[in-house]
Amino acid sequence: MKIVSMDISHVPAIAALEEQLFSAPWDEASVRGELINELSLWLVAEEDGCVLGYIGSQTVLGESDMLNLAVHPDHRRKGIGRMLTQALCDSLRQKGSQCITLEVRTSNNPAKSLYGSMGFVSVGRRPRYYSRPTEDADILRKELLP
Image (spheres, rainbow, N blue to C red):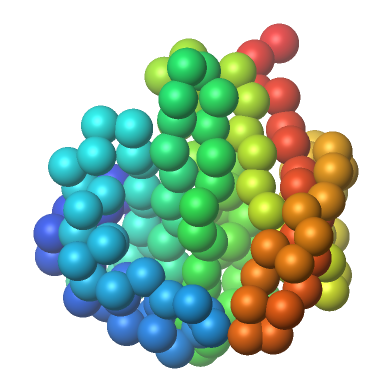
């Protein structure tokens, strides 16, 4: 497995995973649009040309926001989510980002555990942030620069 920058060849598989995994998925056009967005950085975990997972972010004025993290159900519990998150943090740090923030469903304890083990801390809550089902989001943040 290797982690690479997203390119046009990854878009259909990412959109398919979005559709499979999320209640409000990004479509192909939205994912493809991130390729030309100068604020965006998306990474893909791939093996033998297959997308195992991906992570996306946008950065404005030295502060990054993690948009999406997904791992194909057949490849979960192998550390791919952790590797993608670490690779994103490292890449953003190298680009001069000072911090990264994300939202996670309040009930998503596995994700919150992963992020907590990587140094993310809770900084707030967004009421009714998610739909289908409606749920609050915990806001997590990690400082990237010493």
